[in-house]
Image (cartoon, rainbow, N blue to C red; front, side):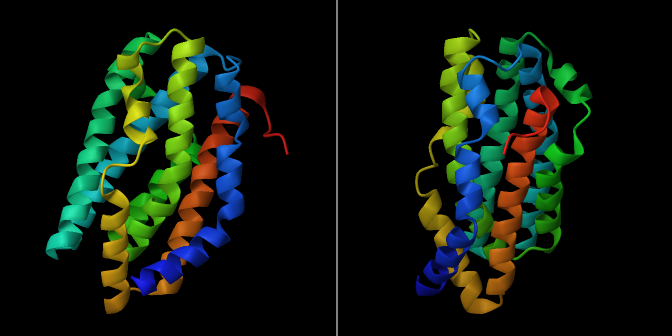
Length: 226
């Protein structure tokens, strides 16, 4: 696993500052303080509807593109997770007092939608290693924020455990995910994957993740505080 370890080490170092910004983001802090207007939580759910609706297609394309058995199994598992998350948006909508069709009708913000547009690019053109590495580096900060959101929504906004299942799905990594992703990265790097492209995918996905939170914060409170 030396190839994967080396590339991931550099990628994590290159994006460490962004990861810290994600973990300290004022949007999550506002939810924890109960300062975010409830209607703005509906915006969060609407953005996620469009993101996951697109990501389902992107990951399905990855399943189709990579037919090596354990590459395909990795992306099938990711696809199952995306499907579970999409289904968990309905009880979140219920908890926020809106309907599934309300989420569907939400018009996504460009900055919040950039992440999923890049995922569509990766689905069509990215290497298996690039996608697996981008997920592996991106998911921890996203998962931590989801765990904090779950707790805060129950404490401050009256949501019940069944309403926050969406966040709980991401709060802890799926068993075996890290090892499976690392195996994909190692095998693809040993074959044809470009390590520069892998690191670039990590850097860009992290940046688009930050853009997502910045856009939502800006929509609620104005310009993100430095």
